[in-house]
Image (cartoon, rainbow, N blue to C red; front, side, top):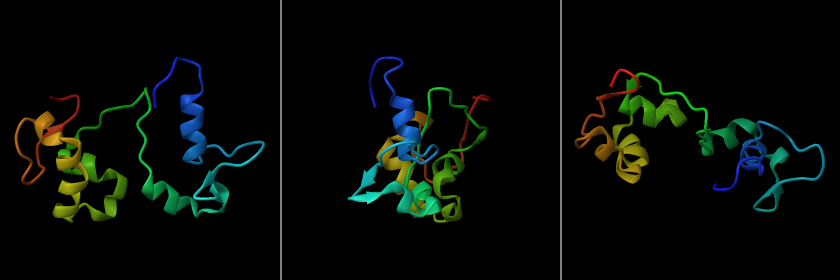
Length: 107
């Protein structure tokens, strides 16, 4: 999402992810009020990195799997979800066969 400072990008993202609920009106996803979705299911499907993000000292595999940590041992899924699609293998500097390289402040 792109826009000028103070235009509400962060607020919209927080509303979509239900970190906030609207005080008026509703937000619809496929015609259904977001408040009618199971919050845990909704959070499992959405990943957000805010401007004030932190880097955690974890392996690339852990960083990619953090959105679905229960799948961390499913290497094929982790690779397709993160390394290939996001081109993280290029960021890490080599193909991520085992996704073991550490990423974070220590680099």
